[in-house]
Amino acid sequence: MQSTDKKTDKSRPLLLIVDDEPGVRQSLQLVFNKTYRTIEAASAEDAIQKTMEESPYLILLDIMMPGTDGLGTETNQIRERRVPSDHADRT
Image (cartoon, rainbow, N blue to C red):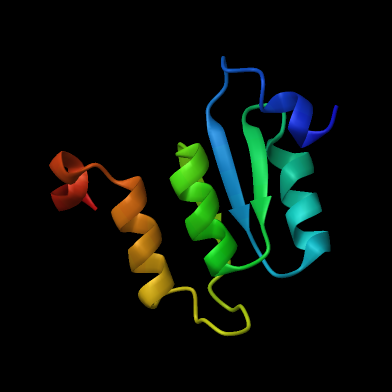
């Protein structure tokens, strides 16, 4: 079953896998697809967009990607879009 099929199964939480290496994204998807619905992003910018569109339950983020260190501005933008304001002090 592909990740697009799993997106329709709302009984499992949504996991966003962010990595610039397609093989890493595919491997992580294979590991987690029985527990989570999975979607992928190849860049921090794509992850920001998908976070706004999909509101994932969990995000696995590569911290060594081209154009970003994974811990910089993009990560803060993802967190701001993902964490509701009443939970921001818990992160």
